[in-house]
Length: 467
Image (tube, rainbow, N blue to C red; front, side, top):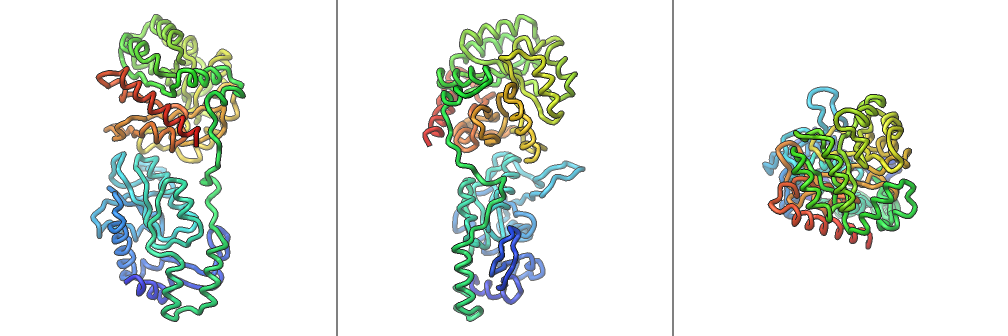
């Protein structure tokens, strides 16, 4: 069926030879366009059958499939019907109404999803689809493509930890068409030479930079912010990159936890507004524990209002956060004025962390928003210590990347929280600090759990520095 399908695609106009300008701007001697298959049901059926067969033959584990918009959508739909695997759809842009979601369909965080693609050139479209799926909490490790143009796409995808399973390569098509006298040897040679010498470039924003990861000690030296320098030194000296999220509702429980876990953490993260019995004594005792065990206090306030209001929230009210927190978290969408306001009200050894990406399923944060948040933070290095993120959003060594939603058991919860392991957070996503909540606070032995996370996180850091 495979060889016959290639010939039928030529007859239907799906494979052409000549001079064609591709999306990348490259002029190619061959053009493969599977969009015409929607008008040829038998061809579409056969392509989907080969995709389904490849998934079975390669024994790819999956709960869902997703076609890259738009050409692969009908292929994925047919594959879903053949395999009974549920399908989800990725929108190229979120709707301005309804659920406003990028990923449509029924799914659960932690499920594995195969990306279906028609043609792999650079791999950019698959990576962009995988990013959207990952942001929704799904796991993407494999992509099945009808055709690999053999121009670097599979290698690019491997850098993003995605394995490509292709049904055909360009050279397979040439061999079949030569054997059936559909093309002459000169045409085949032109295409082979093109494939050998011309590589399809990734979209610039997807190109991974080779950046040597410095140790915390090395990063502390050139850092201008005194609090960032202190944090790097704590992490190096205590051999921990663990931040515990103390989302408890009683002051005594939070203080007890801080005392028990103090030796194993670099940051103690609070949500002071969920305390049912807050009093001015609480932050004073917490600061004593921070000095005793050498950790920083980060109030996860996620400030997000206009400058003057945020300044009042930070310095006044019942919590008077500025009087005791080393760090606060801040959303970027109010714009740079929010940083100006907080900085004006802070001491030189206080700072903030910008929320660039969230760990909740269906987050509305876009790639553009993340990039703008990082740019905004990098412009204020004397106040912004780093970013809360799910990926390596900045390569500047003076900024700390903190990844929440870290847990040994990576199954999500019923409220949209998505988890990843310490090794994934540090080794694959580039985190400097892992933020762990319920994996420790709900444990029968929080101290033992903290030690386990401390070791896992720091081991992953040491491995990343070594490579």
